[in-house]
Amino acid sequence: MIMKKFLRMMMTGLLMLVCAVSYAAAYKTLSFPDDNSASNKVGGYYKTVVDGVVTEDLVWDAKIGEDTWSITNFNNNSWKDWAYIKCGSKNAPTVASIATAFAIDKAIASVVVTIDKVSTPEKINSVKLLVASDQTFSTITETVEESDITTNFKKGSYTFKINSPAANKYYKIVFDIQKTGSNGIIQISKVEYSENAAEPTPEPDVPVAKGTGTLADPFNCTAANNAATALGVGNTSTEDYYIKGKVVSITSPFSTNYGNVTFYLSDDGTANGQFYVYRALYLENKKWAGEEPNLEVGDEVVVCGKLTNYNGEPETSQNQAYVYSIKGVTKPTTTVVDISNTPETAYTVAQALDLIKAGEGLASEVYVKGYITSEPEVSAQYGNANFFIGDAADATENLLEAFRLKNLENTAFTEETVNSIKARDQVILKGQLMEYSGKKQIGNGFIYSLNGSTTGINTITTNDATDGVTYNLAGQRVAESYKGAVIRNGKKFIQR
Image 1 (tube, rainbow, N blue to C red):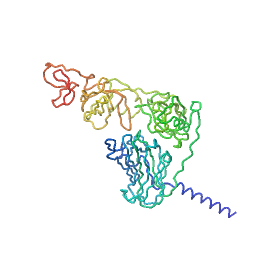
Image 2: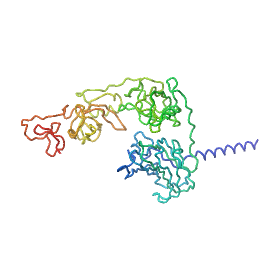
Image 3: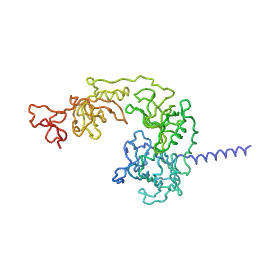
Image 4: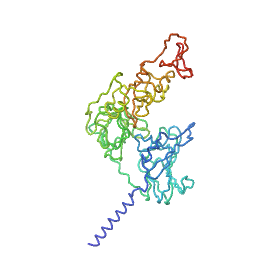
């Protein structure tokens, strides 16, 4: 009896030891957004490209605690709803990398990369890990390179196993990528550096496909992934399918700006076997206008719409799918608040900011009155303008951003009218209030009035048609040095 008990204790201890070795926590982990996310926002896959060649790399630092990594040619989208980074550009070949800017004081035996997405792997020339004794990687002590990228480098946990682990080494993961058909073909959310060669967490089994895609028998996420993949790259289904699952994460929440949502769905609410729902509309196949229920992580939902295979990634087709139900609810349960007003009752900027903060009724079209506080950015190419307004012409705080607004009478800005608005002009704007990535804006609209005038001025009437005085298109007298569309002696022309 004593011997059996002793053997049983030995076996238990041995099992605990094996589990500790197999699943020990990583010694160092880089995840996103990192601790330096307030200072390392970028929005591209390189810094400069000339004639299809990258001439200057985009380099930024990521930090976890006191540890720093140097990141090259990866986009983080300024951390706007991204918990990952992407590399690969459609404009030029790139070499992207993730390198420790510090020597790891332990002997690292494996580096594990969590890959959320790999599309068009045939565009990847090489994937390798460089181990060096110096921060500049001029003295490479070991190179671990993947020999079969198409087969082995895919979504999941990818492990670089180091043959000769040693302390005080630097580690650099390098991705050599051709010019791609779309940006961001590799998506990474985590890098782990471990003292043991085993992967920290084994990949769970992929769930079995279930369902026929009808409302009565919806696809599970595995079946939806399979059906979209089977369409072939670049193809979209001709019929709608129903997909049921739990929300894993929301990458772009519902907003009144676009009225849609982007999120990941899975059968059990974990990242295992998840399916990508891209820009789906709200309940009843309508744009979201602030109603309840909103979508939250963990909610059980049914999505209806067309499936597509986008560059090898299975997902719903943009704006061709909608959330059919949220926790069993198929219709909005609250009445939409109406905050619309008139030009005569235009909101102040302070009132508009309060309305955005309250978050109700933002689908309404409203009028907001204020002063342009800085020189506008006006595009004749796109016919719109971006600028800020405040309740005073010299305001520097509590500003509202006018986003891509058209000119008076809801007309596009042209080469002749790009200089018709300027700092300190008083305007009434018509559009929708919104908050996008922390920015409070008025968009989807136009300049209703400029310095009291609601129409563009085509001619100027003076006491003397040949008085030689120069006016801009807003009817204001300007100097001879003024650049842009002007009227002089009753004739309109461009003054350069």
